[in-house]
Image (tube, rainbow, N blue to C red; front, side, top):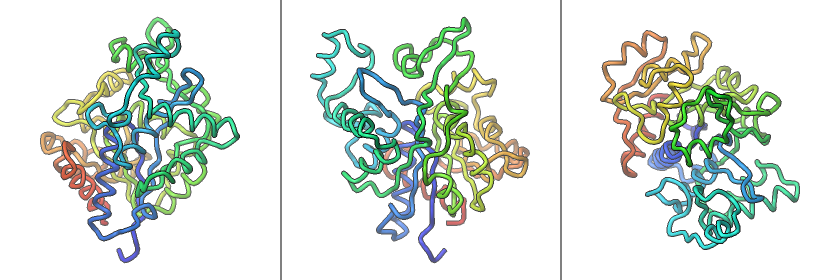
Length: 327
């Protein structure tokens, strides 16, 4: 391909952050100096919430910090070498959630975002402004400008914000279903469907398929845009050897009746030839025996190393995803 490839990644969470880093590295290895003109990341905003009067966007910030090289890679969220003085003061006042830690530098981001939102900027405009601070090498877009926070509904009807269920309870409370109130009236953020339509490849990151990629695809018009693009759509399995890599995606999958396996998640997305989304699916060497199952679902299986334990692994996976799309 002579022109710079146009790559769109749907992503959220730690897995999404690492994968986006790998795709950026793979594009740079191809000699692209300005990867920001090539790489667009559509970020999950279902994790967002209001807390202590400020708007938090956990997945947006995790991917922004990772691309900027200032993220806390150990924890997987927040800023590296951050302090927590303000968080402790909030707790002394009985404000916020004592089990939801906010670093001081991280709070600076939330305060800036909230101020801009109060001034009338949209989440898309806020993210664009945030992106000017660092050389991210990518254009970041929220999945929607609407607020459609994820709510976890338990079997007894109790409703919890996703962050309370995930962070406080560590997904130990069995969910009956996940909801995004307001999402039916939402629309893809400006630029999202245009980027997908013009893409040379659309990649589904190895993020939680239920609460990271799921909300993105639930935005009206999003699934249709992915299905209609002329570009190949390549997904990367978040399951390796029948187990989740990080987090509690297995609990989420069980709640919607999907087995925790690479083939089952491929089936959840579905083959484009059968009205689903995927043309190809990268699954781990540990799951090579499932390749025929994936192929039987109408999706081209590609067995590749999927571990992203370091920068080299991230770049190798990013390269494998691009190669799968002919780039």
